[in-house]
Amino acid sequence: MPDKKVRIVPLGGLGEIGKNMMVFEYGDESMIVDTGIMFPENDMLGIDYIIPDFDYLRAKAHTVKGIIITHGHEDHTGAISHVMEAFDAPVYATSLTAGLLENKLQQAHMLDGIRLNTFEAGDELEIGPFRVETFHVCHSIPDGVGLGSPRPPD
Ligand SMILES: [Zn+2]
Image (cartoon, rainbow, N blue to C red):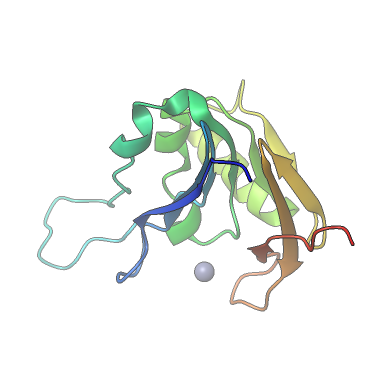
């Protein structure tokens, strides 16, 4: 039995609306799911938006093997340019989500050099040690996916 453990580390989005970002780690490899922002409360004057605190991952940026974005809402995509400043890893998204990400990265003058890969719901992704099954979900923006672990071969 391998002595490595899977660690699932939420960096935002649990118990709050926004800042969705989660890290899956296995040994010295990891993948990020979503890079969202949170909109400020009425009393947060002068704040445009709030990004997740991903300092936890900065120290081990080399472990990040890929970034999956599940859908195009701001609370899942809005921090992409901040995250891509910190990590050099390919991004995976469905075509509508990828288009929205492209737009954000272009506005941040960061599109060159970003490896943006598109997939379709139902495709299986391999990111470092992770095999990820994607499936269509019904949501208020098209082309969203849920993620799961594919069934091991019989
Ligand atoms: Zn959403």
